[in-house]
Length: 311
Image (cartoon, rainbow, N blue to C red; front, side, top):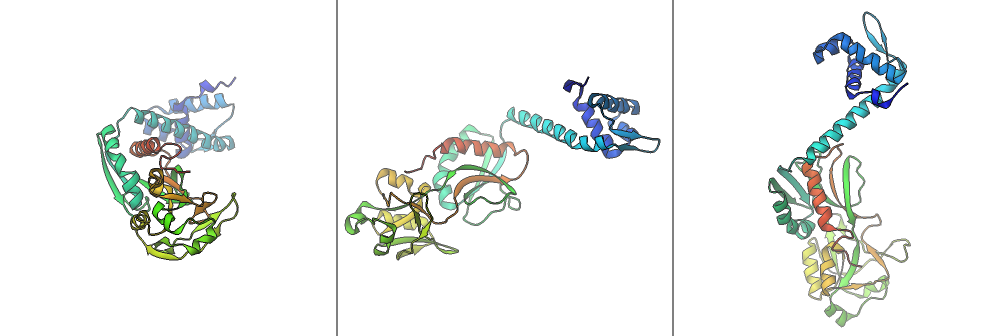
């Protein structure tokens, strides 16, 4: 009677080696054991499965149909055990060496750099390299371990750990509102002074919707355009006009009351696709310990909901 415990990992490894080499003697030489031990291990595995796995003759060992079917299961089982062993071993180790981080400029300044002293204190054997750039970075080609990315996640060649959504708000200072009033609907924005971010693909669109309906683009008059979000934020805080920015950039200003949220009955965005804040890294089965350490740390400090969220 077949019992699951009668199949050993050793027998699976020998089976895989014989399947690949199609020879008992070659596997025996490689493993430093006798050919009879290899043959006996295969016989025991066949008895446990109740299936013949190889045809034997004097010239070759040829997999049967059952052997060809079982090889995928054997490889998966041994690979999973190897991964489990590696992960358990990693848990006994301390993160060490260089870990390279990449992030958008303003997000990195506001929500990565301030947390690095605590990270370094907790993991003293890690050295940190932080590169801030708004250029596209490919972790398969560029020397980067973890990329903090904001936007639509579509590339399946990366693993992504999502921290949370990116939410947009229209906002202005109390001084601006006292002088110009607040818009009652997105259509009123054409009567206001707007401060618009302009990236490499042109000025951001201002999109609004009600009750999970369709996004509508509202062209706005730009009193000031800039490719620098911090400059636009400074101008808005000084009462120059209305901005449309994500909560990670202006959430603290709204929490302090330096900016007032406008159009509270509408959702705002600059793209129709859902935008997320995530950490991405190359698509590997077992991410390195340093990568997991960075991501787990920022999951803890960002919290759920994200600490900068403003409703």
